[in-house]
Amino acid sequence: RSTYLHTMGALMADGLGARETDRIMPVVPMFHANAWGLAHAGVAVGADLVLPGPDMSPKALASLIATQRVTIAAGVPTIWMGVLPELKGRDISALRTIPCGGSAVPKALSEAYREQTGMPILQAWGMTETSPVISVAHVKSILADATEDERADMRATIGRPIFGSEIRVVDPVTLEPVPPDRKTQGELQAAGGWVAKSYYNDDRSPESFTEDGWLRTGDVATMDEHGYARIVDRTKDVVKSGGEWISTVELENEIMAHPKVAEAAVIGIPHPKWDERPLACVVVKEGEEISKTEILSFLEGRIAKWWMPDDVVFVDEVPKTSVGKFSKKTLRETFQGYVLPTTEGPPTAGDNDRAG
Image (cartoon, rainbow, N blue to C red; front, top):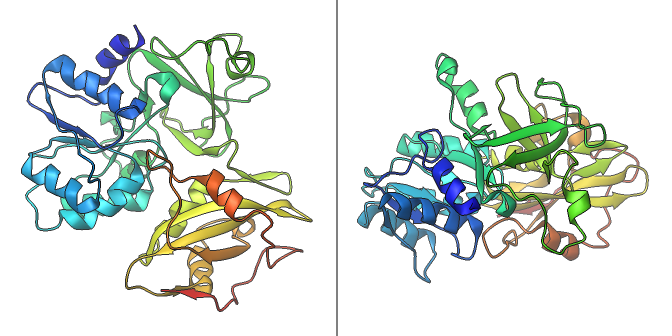
């Protein structure tokens, strides 16, 4: 039943809008909800499916998009980071939308696609428990006069719920909605015809669902006046510093806005005074060089001073899960016992560490 209802929701124009003439390429393993959700929708309307083989390299995926005349290509952000440079010089005129989910889409990545291809990434949000898509970041018609930068900000949200589903951002204790001021953080919750109501024979059920039937997603989010929700972080990933929360997602997006940075993941490291402080793990683009000082200087004025990472380490790659998401769990294990260079407050930009 949930797959049937989800298919109808996903096929709506303000959902993913697939139609019979489409050629859909889900760039995720078929065991994952992101794949079978879109694949079922494609079959329902008679669209062609293009399923990548064992070669999931950016070059191979870009070639498939061009040669197979793919119209809808869906994958996680890390996939599209690698594919973008491989699209240069290829005929991708058939491609009309790039739905992206699994983790927050960096604004810089979406804008890079808009600048190179004329088509920004379409952020969609959901999880296995929501079958998976429940909201899509289409820009509403009443916001047509928004500036391009404002529209880019809206595309960086998870959007609004598609018909048949609901989302809300609430105080996790009182369940009162947070004010739609884009600042106040709360717990993102979801409900709808294709949203799970419980876990089968699982002790997690009572704590994962509210008494009024909403799924506690585990995401921390804000809401704006137009009903667009923005995920700040996963509850388990936020850095809890001095009683306040620091969004690792927002930090990562700002770091990845640097033209020399390929990937960045932020984790919390224990701190004797502040409980936790952020550690930035950065992958530098091939052929580039950058220092810790440059990254910290780049962040000045872009984030609150107390959000500034206490340290920056350069890694060859950010570990990823089987579906391409950043594996914060692996990073936390790798840097278990890591001693930050600061113990009394935020760092100063004066370190000579370099990468490249």
